[in-house]
Length: 381
Image (tube, rainbow, N blue to C red):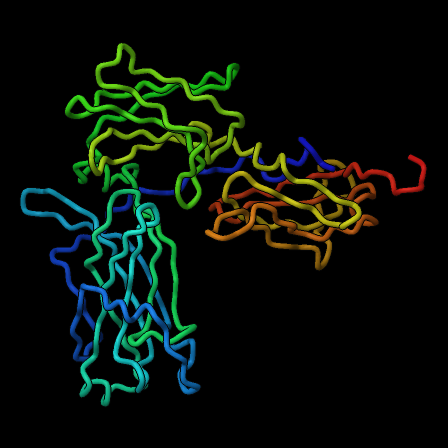
């Protein structure tokens, strides 16, 4: 096994690029392609949750696109809120009456739906043409995790598009400057690496309310790592210590006041410490494979390569490249076997495993060479 040495992709950035101005929406509304007579409904028709048998004439590709983005709606006195913009398109079929888009808050399971119906007269004239619909009225909160679905009206089995989406947080310059909740005071912290604890100084919460702080692993949502610590409003100290076991780039602090709809502030103390991600890479000679159980959501590409000597260019071996995906999706399992590595190729001098991150804008390839393979059963070391 390769334990501790399997550092494939080091010195890689864990941050994303933010700060671009968010588009503004003056009024909520729904619009359709020119030439289509549409009307919208905000309340959900529960019967559209149940799917009908799909006729042979209706292709699953009738739903063509589902694109999501965040916009900002600001009142004259500069009170701003966020809305989710949903852009969808389908090819109008004679059996279809329109579209329905639904947004579910992953944390609370609250679901909001909007539908667009095309008039019967318009459907007769526009069959076979592309219908584009823009929904601008899904109100969302800062840093919300959403699950968005797009269905036809009526809903036919197997015809649906799904997307996961995370609303920008207060770290976005435009959101942080214009959303009232982002003006709350942030907590401060410092890391004691020797004792493996993070000490957090809670800010003064509004209305003399209590304050909560927790450690969490930031996937699509932030998953608990231990119970939240509570700082009481009338306590003598506003400092708490949170122990941790591993320094991971997705291990984050989250703090919020004990008030309704409080904005949660996040900070990730170890966001540049990517080396620990690769401690769980192992080579299994019997299975001739590398397995990887990452503790954070990452994607990469690995291959075998040959280099004539230390420091020389490593030449990729043909047909050895594989994509590697961590637990970035909702339902993905924790363990991923991501490349076949024949023992006769992996366990010879000058053969290396070369990897690079594909979920980062810039990623330099890293190599792991001179694999230490256990001796075959029945052979001498």
